[in-house]
Length: 390
Image (cartoon, rainbow, N blue to C red; front, side):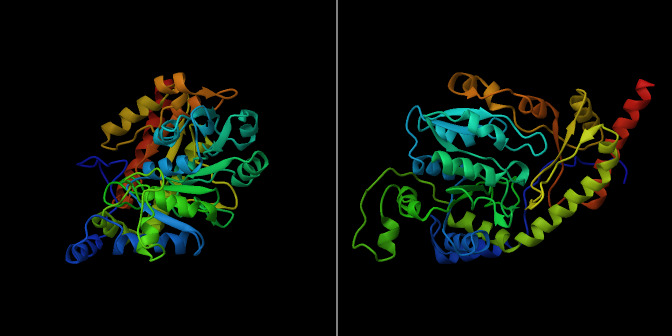
């Protein structure tokens, strides 16, 4: 395939083709506001396929809403500290900062780009209340180690599994191991609720009732709808995190096609890995690492570009009509992160990795021929670099 006539995007919204049928059904049911048929179907799917029928799942307007509910369930108070990686999207921390928490940033494990569990205990102080492991790229954190530390120090664990729907750690779905798990259905994720959406997985039975109250604007409306009380009242804090039925219908079509969606993404991911291995073998790039006893969902495919060549590579790929881009900037180096948080220990990996990571196109509409262009141009860049240096 020659140079593409139109850009090959890094991401593209997943559409499976059956969403419209569900949306038309919603219109006939005349309930657009949410918490109806398709919300319930999505929640049942999550409870069955993610949690094996155990615990409770709430489908929400965003993963941010799930994190905000999690911060309340963790009973975060002003001045409390939460341990979190700096290499993540800002809402991971914002949800807890809104409750007055101080983020304590911990360095990444160099292999996985997830929080280095061996550094967590050194970051714990008498003010520590929670650990927020982020499963970057759908790859699992070392959850055994993290849960062991949490039990020892009686800390709340909120898994940020925004990128990790259907990824596993030792046979358990990510998001189902900590006290709670938060999932994103934003348009760049494997499954989307038509642009925005999320879910809260409540794994501690003792948190279910309060989570439902928070979700219902601080009322016990859910118990009322189940016939457990004769009226509902304002009992607690609450927020509006309802996903519309149109979006839930969109999402449910994708959840029903989850195996096909992830299967195609894994095909792309594996093809990159094998195709680019020679570049990694020669030391030009570093490829992603997936630990044993884990599976991932191919949410992203990244390479780490060494020797300060990333910007030149981005320009080379753009000239070939291939979009590539970095991802997160370290939160501890941002203006708000510098004034309202602190980094524990030495920043050995986080800033370096942030300057090296480059996302390659991964999405359902990426054809094998287009992926060949991406791989070909990556090799072409280093061929030119080698020739220039000779």
